[in-house]
Length: 181
Image (tube, rainbow, N blue to C red; front, side):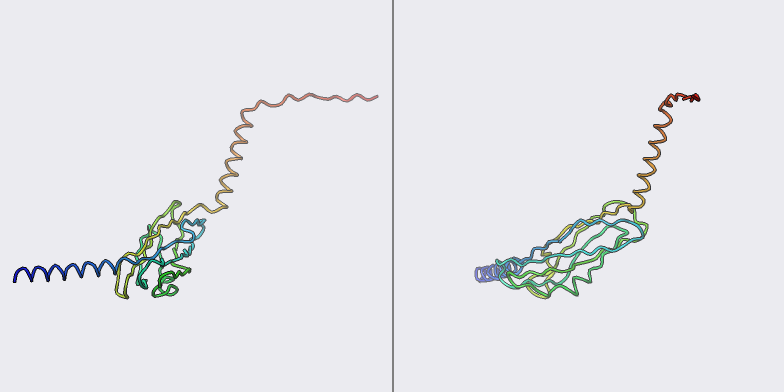
């Protein structure tokens, strides 16, 4: 009796383990079109990140794209509504989709620097799955506005010219006296 119970339990657990492995074996490949974007900080702005999602031919069934997970450096904010509005509910083996995935808002007054984050697609074998299918890293590089760089460059050039003028001895001048004929 104990032997039959143990065998039955082992069979049940093995069946669950194998069916779970099959449910999570299928995946997608997420590729951001331009993962590193620059913005000149003037009064803030918004960057749009586009992506291609591909379901390999080796998948056994459709892979559902049920949600996402992300992180972003403050004070930037990420809006993922493009994913929910544009992307399909699922991809069959061999299918791909390209579209806008999310936007990043850069507020005015953001410090100059690089802000990095990640965006993960969640889903799996059915509409209730929440496994991480793939993750893509991205960055926002906030640079000074071009007019500030021009102003800085002009100031440096003027300072160098003034410095060199103060150190260079004046050129000897010769007087030319004209005599009437």
